[in-house]
Structure formats: C-alpha cells, structure tokens
Amino acid sequence: MGLNIKKANKTYEFSNSSVSKILSSKAFGKDILIRDYASDTAAISAGLVKGDIYHKSGDLKIVR
Image (cartoon, rainbow, N blue to C red; front, side, top):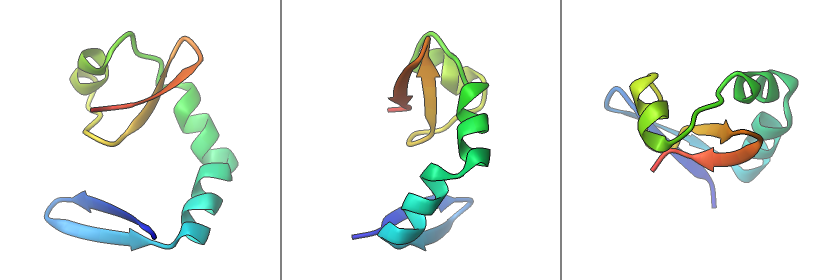
C-alpha cells in the first residue's frame, strides 16, 4: 500500500519505502516544526490543505 497525493489535478504515488524516507528526512522534520497551529481552521487559513501535517504545541496533527 502506498500514499496517493493529489495536487493541481495530478496524483503522485509513493511506495511505503518512499514514504518512510520522506517522513524520516531532516527537511520534513524542519518543515513540521514551523507548522504550529491552534486548530485545523488556523492551519487551513495559513494555506495547508486536507492531508497536510502540522503540530499543535508538539502534538502531531493532520488537516481534516
């Protein structure tokens, strides 16, 4: 099972191995550190979309 990401009418597919590498990369971690939002509404207002990852005071969240 892989991960499908839809963006601008395009679907990108990643294998589980690829997803593991993305999630464990330093760049991904740094990106998440700056995404601190109080709620999904705040995250969406900041430009995140459904499925994007952010944190709320250290708790990992996914935009719904």
